Length: 204
Image (cartoon, rainbow, N blue to C red):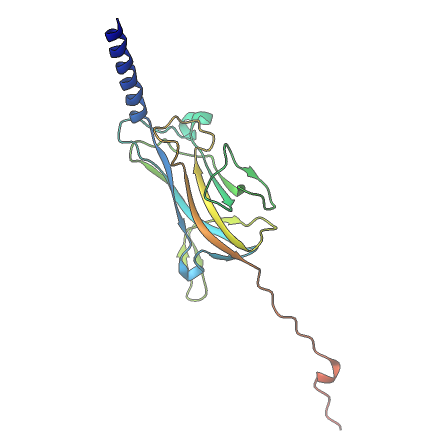
C-alpha cells in the first residue's frame, strides 16, 4: 500500500511540474531614450521616454492570452515610476503627483495580443523628430512626469500581468526596470536692468 501511495504521489508531482513547465512565462524588456536625447538623465517636469516589449518565454505550446481575445482574462502591462526595482502587488495606482510605485499617466497597456511561445508584443509610440538640429526620428512612448518628484535616483519599471490573471511557470520575472536620474529643473537666470543702465538719448 505504501509503495502504491509513493508511486501515486510521484505521478502527481510529475503532473504538476509538467503543467508548470507547459505554462506561459511573461517577461518584459525595457529600452531607454538615446544618449543623443540625454540618456537616462531627466530634468524634473519633463516627459519620460521609453519603449518596451513583453515576451512569452515558454518553450511548450502554451499561449499567454491577451485582452483582445480573452478580455479581462488576458494579460496587461503597467508602466510605473519607483525608487526601487520592485513592482507593486496588483495594479499600480495612478496619481498626477508623485507617490511610490505610481502608475504613469497613460501607462496601463490594456490592448494586448495573445502571445504564443517565443512570441512578443512591442509597445512604442508614433515616430517623431526629436533633438536639436539635426533632429532624428524616434518612436518612444511618452509619459508625463508626476509633479513633486524630487531630484535623485529612480527606476522606470514595466510590470507584465500585474493582476496575475495568467498562470505562469515563473511569476518572479514579470518586472523589468531601468535606472534613471532626475535633476532639478533648470531655471533661466533672472536679469534685472536698472534705469541708469538703459541707453540714454543723445543730446540734440
